[in-house]
Image (cartoon, rainbow, N blue to C red):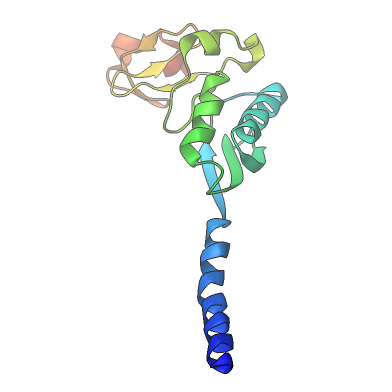
Length: 150
């Protein structure tokens, strides 16, 4: 009987251990975040860490935020919400205009595409003629818009 109890404890330990480790699994994610400079980098990374990311590294060149976090502590969406609250558009969320307008002028980037309407420029207006950064629907109609000059 004593031997049976020992085997039961060992079996229980073997089968419960993977579940304990699964709850503490570290997730690595990449999130597109718009921004421009070193100040943006500090703010974006600080916001991600405040939202529960254990590591955060944003690249000015690629506009990619590489994060790692524990699933039990935070989520990709919570990290994006914190970054958007700081004034930066992410791949899934658009920062509030008030938060964006509080950014230093060097940090005010060309806003991400606003649905089918076009791109949002630094002044916050939508250039409706632009299909994307490099192409216009009608060159004559949008030759004076900033997004089409690129």
